[in-house]
Structures are given as C-alpha cells and as structure tokens.
Length: 183
Ligand SMILES: Cc1cc2nc3c(=O)[nH]c(=O)nc-3n(C[C@H](O)[C@H](O)[C@H](O)COP(=O)(O)O)c2cc1C
Image 1 (tube, rainbow, N blue to C red):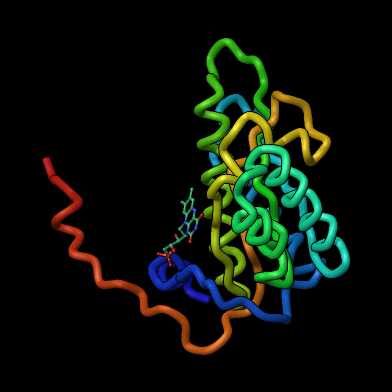
Image 2 (image 1 turned 120 degrees about the horizontal axis):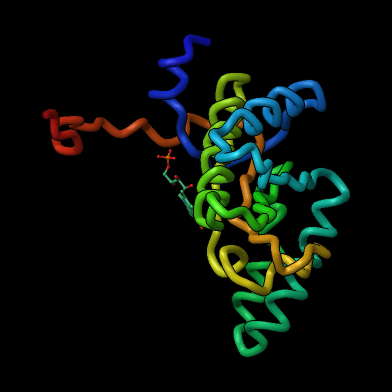
C-alpha cells in the first residue's frame, strides 16, 4: 500500500473481529514499532501480546487490578474483566524507564508512543485495524506489577487488534491551515 495513503487513511476501530495478524505479519508490526525514534537507543519499549486463550489471563489481570484499586465500583470491575474480549488480540504497550543522564523518562515514554503509532500503521498497511486505549487500566504507577513488571515499567495503554467489522468510521476531513503556521 502507498505509504502516504496509509498514513492519511489509517482509522482506529472499535469493532474488531477475527482474523488477527499471523506471527509473520506481527513480526513486521514489531519491526516497524522498533524503528520508532529512540534517544540514545535505550530500547525502552516492550510489547506484551495476548490472543486466543491468553486473553483470559489479561482479563484476570484487569479484574484483579480493578478489584484492588476500585473495590467500590462493581460496574468498572465487570467492564475491566470483559475488556480484553473486545478484540481477538491485545498488545500491551510498556515503557521500561531506564536511568540516563540525557534521556528523561518522558522521552522514553514518547518513544513508546511513537512505536504505538507505527504499530497502528503497520496493522493498517497489512489490512488490519486497531485502537489504542488507556483509561484507568493504564498510565498509573500500580498496573505494571499486575503484569509481573518492576516499578520502573509504565503501561502506556493497550492496542486492540483485529479486522475492521463493517465500514467503520470515516476519516475526518482536516483543514491543515488551522493547525500549521508557516514562517
Ligand atoms: C494515548 C491515547 C489514549 C487513548 N485512550 C482511549 C481510550 O481509553 N478509549 C478510547 O475510546 N479511545 C482512546 N484513544 C483514542 C483512540 O485511540 C483513537 O485515536 C480515536 O478514537 C480517534 O480515532 P482515529 O485514530 O481513527 O482518528 C486514545 C488515544 C491515545 C493517543
């Protein structure tokens, strides 16, 4: 697919169904992700892939977290438990924050953010779709340990992956002049 067309026409999708990418296709996705800009080549990004039976494991991780941190919110506990089954595959976006004199944590998290966009683009280029979600299950100092990760890890969100069901959302028209100032 034409690279610029893919950049302009990529859409997130909330309606994801099988099939999901094969191992070979996901290898291209991760290769693309790992070409995100990365100050000092610290390699801070990690990806945890859940699919098939392992979605049940992700569900129990979410449920445990929700029960421990939102014990009064039964609605959220149920929502968290069901969340992984919204798509046939889920990629957890992780930044392993490393100590470096010139590369603060924010730069390392931004690198994972860029990797996330490369994931979405590499999925789209191969005919698949995805959506990046966060909510209460990400971007906090507690969730990483539920994945058996040390406190130097941040969970930046979840990319739900699959095949777009139906037509999906239209790509919005953008007036670039509203966002660009040329000097
Ligand atoms: C860091 C980040 C977190 C997001 N979290 C959520 C979320 O929790 N739930 C949600 O519905 N969309 C979330 N979104 C937005 C979607 O991923 C998506 O970008 C949005 O629906 C617009 O669709 P588009 O990417 O096709 O323009 C998030 C986006 C970003 C960049």
